[in-house]
Length: 537
Image (cartoon, rainbow, N blue to C red; front, side):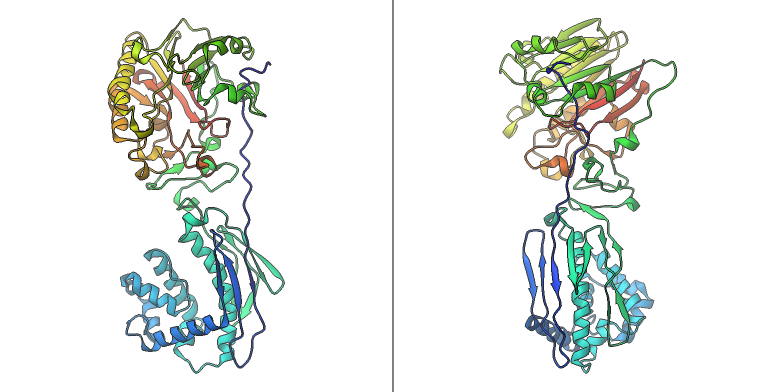
């Protein structure tokens, strides 16, 4: 196959993990005094935190004083009353956040997080520590304990705190940490791998106070993505960094939402004698740039997807480029129809490439003020009309918002309704609107961003959905978060911070004939990915 239109895909996005580490260097413990203990922890922003013996001494003195003298009723709870609280979980639930944090700090346990996390931490502490008769709180309430005992306790706690600090980062400082979470602990010659998903160590320490052994064993945490926990228990697909689209990335996820995973959600290929047509649509964000992309092959894409028709948007071609591309199409796809922008060269542009010869083809909407930017190609087939459409973006400062919502959208809507009088319509392309909050990673932060303004969303509903056109992906996947666009600027694709801007809208009459409506997120080369539709004829 020739160079032109060598559209294809890279097999899989390879994302290498970023490793960072911190180390703890316990010194020799003195018998008569608290030995110097220095530790350094690197935060997600590269900040360093250190503990010295003087700081540790001050913290112990402060906590002892708080335990004995503080008027806070929770911090003064004796061991027997803690037993009562343990036996009556309702008392823990009734505690305020401040009371919970005070109790946890008194017990030497990290006190960051939401109330439910604090309640869980205190319940766990009471279950484990009091039953073992060796709680850290009991140690602090009895200042007559020897310095040696406190020293040994601090040695064990220093290792535990380092691990717990990592968990705190995972649960509390998620936005800062990103996913650079894998760290190493070096404790007396043993290396322990620590990350936000698995915190594991076989290192065991003995606390002299009661002879109890504190073991830091494998602990599992849901791996955080952009401020939200991803857990199979919540019905969310586990994170696979080689497939970032399987991450449920959303600032405000609702109960029951899950991430789109084409490996499990694409329907099995049709079988039997029923005739189907398979259509792909893709905003390529510059066809010539795509053709030059190393490792890109149209032949491989065509073999893998076996599509009948390919619709393109934002080709950014000029009229002079079209003929050479038409001469170099993949064998079997000789029918192609292109429209380019005349108002601004190298801008916009749409196309339909098909191995099925259409009955007729038309360009634009038939309205001169809308047809100078090459935004619409319509192909008529035996049982439907197919439109490849690139809807105008409202632009920086929403300068074209009024044009988009009061002129373009109504004109396109009237055009397809007129076509629908003779046969059903399939409208596909980059419609430049994330219709619902589920269709965008950060809905609250984009209320006045082009593509998610209330005006555009209302226009989308009024001019298309309310006039009998069905959003096929949302109909098939009502609670699925699947994006088709990720901005280059912030590397949104590798963290799945995206928008769903690309659609297959079909006439209600043929919505029941849709076998599959899907997203192909692993195909790269553009800031959009292809989408697909399989329709029973």
